[in-house]
Image 1 (cartoon, rainbow, N blue to C red):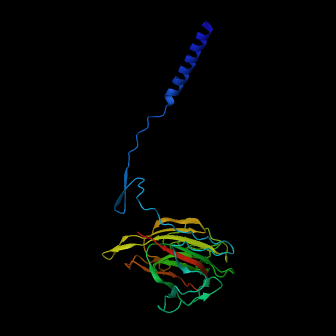
Image 2 (cartoon, helix red, strand yellow):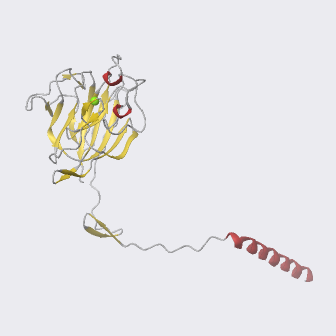
Image 3 (cartoon, helix red, strand yellow):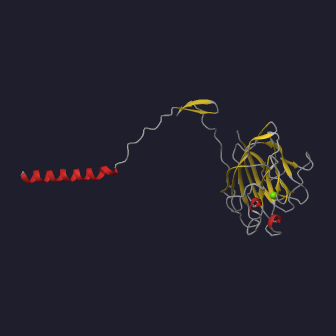
Length: 277
Ligand code: MG
């Protein structure tokens, strides 16, 4: 009995020791989080986890392209080129006239001096998917090598260029917002290989003849983030070796356009989803 009492006392002393050791490192008491029961989105108030709040619409995803297979568009996208014809496009030089670029098997290609082509439909903020391939046979250098461009609202260029071992100025690299913002990384594939752009574009707005809200770009090239929610500081049109345009007020919707820079660049699998601002 005495032995048990001594053992019990020993255990109590040991536990007290553990408690005493633990005390100096004890976590501070947690502050109660603020309780949020209501959220407001687009001027509408919803209770948190309200089952009456409409669910997101169902969309069937398309398939991504791979080496020899061209992908498909999501079910709610507007298809601008599915490999068959350029009926959704027109000449930018001669509006209303057919797009004067060359059709290939499942793709189309720029034609030197034929000018830009642009969509017949006009768009503002959007998600744009487009695939391109610069010439397999390397010709030229710097800005003269596989140059084209994707122009949002026919105004704001995401540069297309063969930048695989090709030095040029950084705000004109492939994936640059031309003359404004270089890409985060150079993720260009080899000349002749198909590449993808996935562009999230929020259009600028204008008030009293001035820009009120600047455009924003997020761009993925070949699945890699190269423009991270970048606020575009102005226009992207080349004026001179070290000069670029500024914002000029324009309509809410304008065509998407592709650049003829004199180099044969191919395009395929183009689709767009309009976005609400
Ligand atoms: Mg260009």
